[in-house]
Image (cartoon, rainbow, N blue to C red; front, top):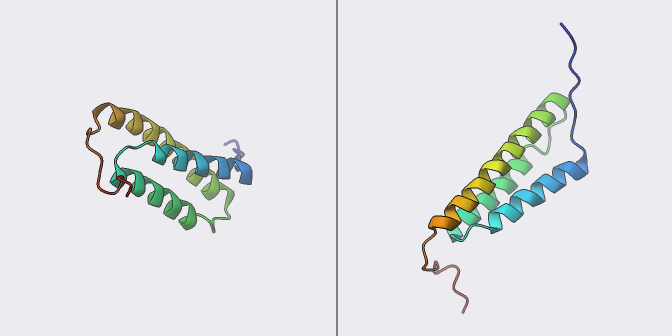
Length: 93
């Protein structure tokens, strides 16, 4: 059995992924989905902040990248079928 080396993401890679998830959240036109995605991103990164095991860090990073891909696809799909009426939360006084 060969030993596999786990590539641990750097701090800058993690921050880049975090910012990408937040940018993707801003692409949703619906207020509720936009806020849910933003809060879920922040909570997920806070939850994994204390990870120190290289395998756990690499796994969490790869799961977050997968979530980014899903969010990007959903943002595109949702933009095609988004309601034309703005939410009351999006109307500026």
